[in-house]
Image 1 (cartoon, rainbow, N blue to C red):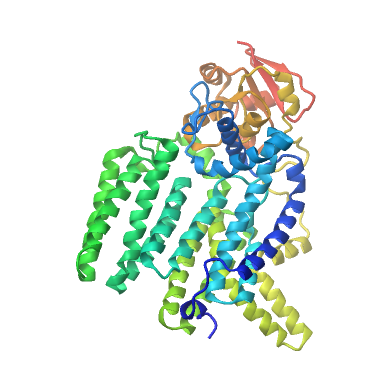
Image 2: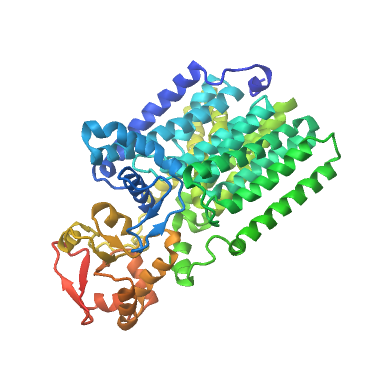
Length: 590
């Protein structure tokens, strides 16, 4: 019976045929992504500000900034802004940069790294997806699973050239953990899964919900069979030891606890849970109720200890953000919004393929027996959890798409076989459309939209607006480092292209600076002048075509930016002529 290979025979960790099939798909996809992304690559255009800040982190490190210091000193000067990111993600970027620098120079080497590292990450993702399909099904399903991943837009968004932020590596860590769940030796596989999850947590605490689900599966195995307790015990031991080692290696022995990144607070909680599970795992078999009571008590103790160390975290990681920052910036970050707040095409692509994959996994569970049946049920749980998270936070759709590729590859094989058995071209065409709608739901929607004439303009756009080309404005300021009040969305680009400093960028650790940045644009001239003086701003920059300024003008009628765009310039600002009208510039003279 198909779908029982994994349960009936062993396969090597990485087989030659597996590598061959994965590599073929990867090479074709890498070429396609590079060619389609050529304008962005040639134009040095990154996907968003996080990618630019990641590059700047690497650049500063290679220029001599401490490995342990991830502060961006040109954001909210003079103290700067300590980023919550880990150095782990900087390593591959730095490695490729150093590798190519002797041949092309540092600047071009950075550019090579920005293209190659996402594609390397893509290879690991395809390999991990292919390995699961290889062990569960057969060679044909393996290639098709990789092909399904190649059509998953939420996944490719995080793995295309110039996308060098950490989201692709999060997918890799999650897939390593799920691959480890397929292992035959609970202790060794549990340690592999736990260490992968430790890296995942070091990259972002957003991993916590999926890690909790993986731990829940390990707990279910324990409750089903006492001899399987090594799964959960080993995972908890590994995730604690791995997290502690990573923390010391990347943060040193700093004892400050943060709510948004791995720190002593989270390490203490992990340590308590790991010790409690280890002790419970050493006793003789006990009723499931006893296991629940002990682990529940240990969990409560861990939470209590964490909040005792960092009581400020009881209200969440963003509790100290100014309401204006939370409402006007954080609430409008599209990738972190729920599926019903996304564009319909985006929502469909995020939700539909994982939903189909969920039903496929449940169907496989119904048609298989023994432990393969249990595996497909566990995989269905993982898919359901990933789908729920993707519906709540759009950027989580990448991991859901990666998980969905495995059962969808198997199902695609069945669909293609059924199409071959249909002898009427009309039925074959209808079946093919159905497959496309399941795997690429945005394609039929796009065709429908193109076929339906509409005079409605897209929201937040202005066809007559001049684009925000900052080069002429930065040239007018000169090479001497200055403090700029600039749009937070353009802040990273300014830091990349010039030696200047900005009041804020769209990163929550700069919450107070973001608030000052917004209020300086929104408040009346006198109040804005006080903020600008406090921040020692030398120049004020405005780009009217940015949606950011539409929000500011709506929030602050008769505010500074509203007045500037209507021609009312206060006497403490002096207009600066630039070679481009898209970005307006004023020098602070009083």
